[in-house]
Amino acid sequence: MAETLTDDRAREPVEPGPSDNPHHATRWIILGVIALAQLIVVLDATIVNIALPSAQEALGFSNDNRQWIVTGYALAFGSLLLLGGRLSDLIGRRPMFITGLIGFAAASAVGGAAHNFELLVGARVAQGVFGALLAPAALSLLTVTFTDSKERAKAFAIFGAISGGGGALGLILGGALTEYLSWRWCLYVNVPLAVIAVVGAALLLKKQPRSEDAKGIDVPGTVVVVAGLVSFVYGLASAESDGWGAATTLMCIGAGLVLLAAFAVIESRVSDPLLPLHIVWDRTRGASFLVVAFVGIGLFAVFLFLTYYVSLTLGYSPLKTGFSFVPMILGIMATATSSAGLVARIGPKVPVFVGMMLAAVGMVLFAQLEVDSSYALHILPGLIITGLGIGLSIAPAFSAAVSGVDAEHAGVASASVNTFQQIGGSIGTAVLSAFAATATSDYLGGLGRAPSTLDTQLAAVDGYTTVFWWAAGVFAVGAVICGALFRPGPVAVNPDAPVLAH
Image (tube, rainbow, N blue to C red; front, side, top):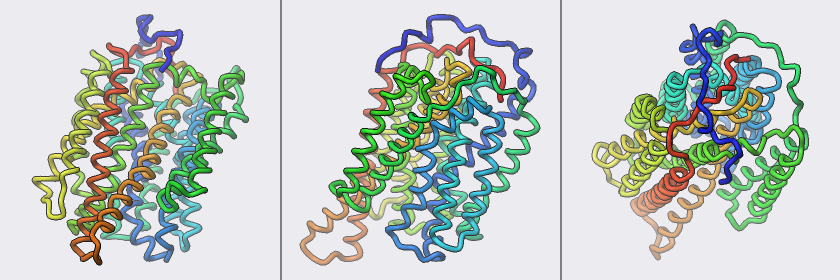
């Protein structure tokens, strides 16, 4: 990946003091508000998965339509993140943060009360739209609130732990709400959480007037990138049901890639680009974007296929399924928070490499699962190792991805992190699901007889373990690529970085 003319190590940072930061006294409370908002967004990626069977039974939609409950959110969220980040820079982080929270809560309430499939999908799309406003504002607010390098490393460690472990927490919460209340509460739960975050933001975040020299929105770039990402993600989602060779799949993926290439050309020529290419091509930030993409792909294998395994093969209840992921949550939190000092001293290069290799080892352990494997002996070790690895890699990546970005581009840099994470998860959803389906069908096709119940279980487990082997490869390749791209040494905090949150 090409380097920019500006090397982040070229100058020693001159960090603003406490008197320069109006949020200094309340910065850790503000972190709690930002972390709560991020938790709302991350929870929604998995909490609905456990609610899907109950929602399908209640509303009577087909298996083919079921995927759009997840894909509708992903399409809106992934395609609008860059625009959300730009609006955060133009209008202000504080108003976009509050608007995103209120809209997300309203959409969640509508989804929880939905009486048909169409309304539920519409609510999920609306959640994605407001999530695309909220997520970049949250990350850029974190960037401008913590100006001391050591404190920023610690804040990003906590933020990274929530981003990595929130999905697993969503499985626990979704299982509890589905089992004891209703699938609708997997959506309603966002409302009280958002209310708390809105109140905290309104009281703690300082107002700042819009900059007089703020530039406008790159309309051509916005239209092309939204169309490109929607087409690409739609094509990947269609591959699961229609197959990789289907005309719809190939046309959508091809059109998406062409449009994204056109977007890169547009951004290199317009005066006020939606995504300034120097943000992506910077070596450190580019490596960070790839880390969150690789982790997004690999995490899907754990959250979805291990959930299938413990619930369908081992027969766990929704609540027990959710709690089975607790060791991974603890592992993510342990390394993400405790490694902050290490990352501040030596930089992200070594922690990211070691973390992703640990995650690869965890996937290899999951690939050994059989129909009658036990949780304590065969699942627990993989969960712990995977959690430790993800926490060690994701927290430094989030921090490095927005380090050295000027105030004007803080929002779009934050949006880019979330975009890569979302696209990585979408790729994981499509590709790994296709691999699992092919392995399962090949296993059953090779029997030469009508499959028994045991044969069906063995075929399903063969699909799951195939996915885990591929996920191990994804993490290992990611470790090598990202480890090579990161510069050695700590990442400097830009002395011109903003200290005021909008």
